[in-house]
Length: 410
Image 1 (cartoon, rainbow, N blue to C red):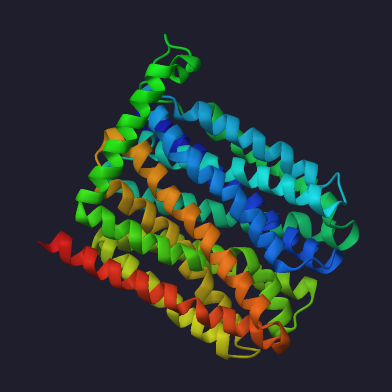
Image 2 (image 1 turned 90 degrees about the vertical axis):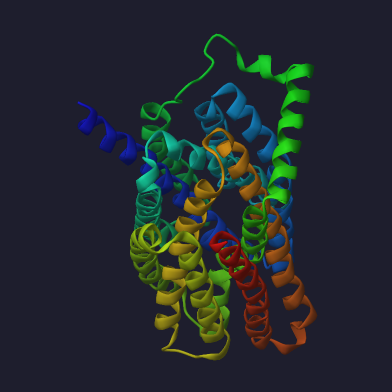
C-alpha cells in the first residue's frame, strides 16, 4: 500500500508545477506583456513596476508566513488560500480592458501565485525522501514545463481566434483544475489540528514568529555557505526573472517573429526545459548541487551572449539553451536549499530563498526596463544591450557560488 501511495503523492505534488506554469507562461511570460505592449501600446517599464510591486509584497509576507507555517504545521492551508487568490484574479484579467485595472489584477494574481510557491516547495519534504530530493524536484519541474507545453497548445487557437482576454480566463480555469490533486491528496505531516489558524495570529504568537524569523535571518548570516548561496541566487534570479517577463517581446522585436512563430519557438524551448529539469535532478544528486548550479550559471552566460549577438536562424539554438538553463535553475536551487538547512526550518528557509527571488524579481525587470528607456533612441539594438547587460549579474552570482563551493569543501 505504501508503494502505491508514494507515487500518487509525488504525482499530485508535481501536478501543481503543471498548474503553476499555466499562469507563469500564459500570463507572466507570453500573453499579458504582449497584450500591454501590442494592443495597449504600454511601455515595458509599467509591466516591470506592476510585477515588482507584487513581488515586493510577497517578499514582506513570505518569510513571516513561512515561519507561521512551520510553527503551525499547516503549509497546505496557505497553499490553498494563495492559489485561489491567483486563480480568481487571473480570470478577472479577462474581464477588463482598462490598463490600470489590468495591472492591479495582474499584481494581485502574481502575488497569489508567487506566495503559493513558498508552501508548495516546503511540501516537497512530505513526498520526497532525503536521498531523492533532487530527483523529485526535477520531476516537479518536468511536469511544470509539460504544463507549459499544454498551456501553449490549449490556448493557441483561443489567442489566434478569440483574443487575449479569453486566454486569461482559460488560464485561470486550467490553473485551478491542475492544482486540485496537490490541494486534495498532499497532506501536512504534523498539523496542530486542535489550534485554529487565528491562534497563530495572536500578539504573542506573532512576536514568537518574529523572534524565530530573526533567529533564522541571523543564523543564515552566520552560516557562510547559506549566505553565499543567497547572494548567488539573488544575482542569478535577477536574470531569470527578466528573461521570463520579457522573452516573448524580445523574440518579436529582435528576431522579428510573428505570434504563431513565437509560440512555436517557446514550445521548442519548453521541450528542452523539460529535459533540463529531469537531467539536472539526476546530475545534481550524483555530482553535487553546488557544482551543478555553477554549470547552470555558465550555461546562462553562453545563452545571453548568443541572444545578444546572434541573428536568425540561431534563435532555435538560443531557445534550446535557454530552456535547459531555465529548467535546471529551479531544480538545482531548491534542492540545494533543502541540503543547507535543517528540516524543522525548511519553511523559513524557502521563505528566505523566495525573499531573495522576489527582490531579484524587482531589480532584474526594472534594470531591463530602465536600459530600454535609456537606450530608446537606438530602436531594436536597445533590447540587445539589455540582454548583454544581464551577463554582469550572472558573473557576480558565479563568484558567490565558487565561494560557496570552497566553504563546503572545508
